Amino acid sequence: MNLHEYQGKELLKSYGVQIQEGILALNEHQAVDAAKKLKELYNSDWCVVKAQIHAGGRGKGGGVKLAKSPEQAGELAGQIIDMMLITPQTPPEGKKVRKVLIAQDVYYPGPSETREFYISILTDRGRGGNVIIYSPDGGMDIEKVAAETPERVFTELIDPLLGLRPFQAAKIAFNLGLSGQAFKQMVHFVDRLYAAFLGSDANLFEINPCLKTSDDRIIAVDAKVALDDNGLFRHPNLEALRDTGEEDPTDVEARMYDLNYVKLDGNVGCMVNGAGLAMSTMDLIKLSGGEPANFLDVGGTADAQRVENAMRIILKDQHVKAILINIFGGIVRCDRVAQGVVDAYKSIGHIPVPVIVRLQGTNADIAKKIIDESGLQVMGATEFQEAADLVAKVLKG
Ligand code: GDP
Ligand code: MN
Image (cartoon, rainbow, N blue to C red; front, side):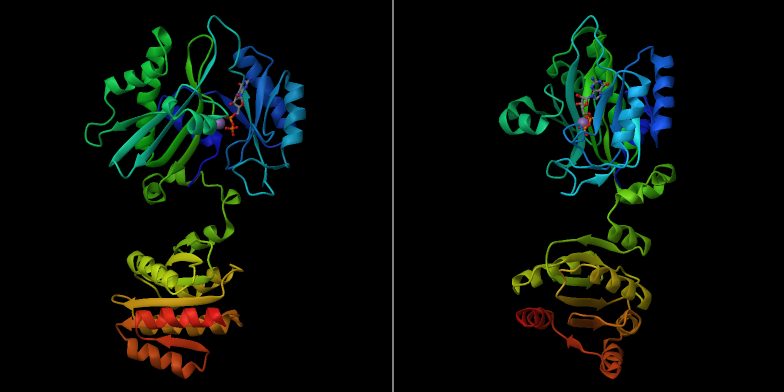
């Protein structure tokens, strides 16, 4: 689950990470009020208007703008709210902006120079631990830095048992070229950031830029936060931050039905129980010349209703030219799945693509009878390979 910048920053702040403060605004009027409030708090006319969408690169797309007065903040908010913001990370048509964060200006002049760093935390499965990836060359061109000067991007592996050790935070601050007060602040920043990452069961934190202000404070100016869906049950307060308006409607529906669904680019819809069987089914589809249109695990409790919901979700994908239902009945009873297929046909009315069904295991014989007697145009298969061959055959027409 992804968070908006303003939500990610609140999460960081709750763990003691210093952030660029801001106030959310839904319209021009609220934006002016927010900017006036920031003016009182931080004694500056300037503020930044930041589009809140689930995509980065907003600065490049015109979604982050500096205002030199509360009135101007209102004007800019008026321009940004409701616009289709196009960035390198949005779909080509862009994403509609529904709210903006009015943030304090933190690039103010002072005794030393302002510097932008890049800091992210994610799990490196290959190395078996979380890594902190960081660079002294943060800001809007970090992709270029990674491509052209990879030696300017550092990685620190965190031992899962020992956690982040103080010398590691110090090493990061050192490699970022800091000293004195800024060095101390950075050590604290990294320590708190890592605590927030662990505490929220996050998959990804990306702070770009992490800023050294001209008076040597270290603050998160941006926050990209992705939380682990499997950890969300432990964090109802974070789950409540979900913005379904930003998510793919099919994903939202699949979650509502508790189905594990991942959309892919192919043309064969798959409905399978169990992640292992789902993956081998996808492999087999590929070997037979097809391309899986999705990963869909209906789970160990597949019943008629779930099968029907899954069928609807698969059919929303216009690229699907055939559906392969591959179920191994262990705890799941095949007859229930078969009934689900028949019910789906009846209630959906018209299923425009061929459906190949392989049901093996508990009550497979009853299942076969249900399908046969339904009179539906469903192709049955007993063996795995047989099912894949049928898929290949219907794809060829
Ligand atoms: P992104 O483009 O989606 O990653 O959005 P960011 O939150 O990273 O903001 C983009 C850029 O806006 C930053 O890299 C900064 O250069 C600039 N920016 C953000 N906050 C301020 C600010 O308070 N003052 C000024 N002058 N620029 C800012
Ligand atoms: Mn950014």
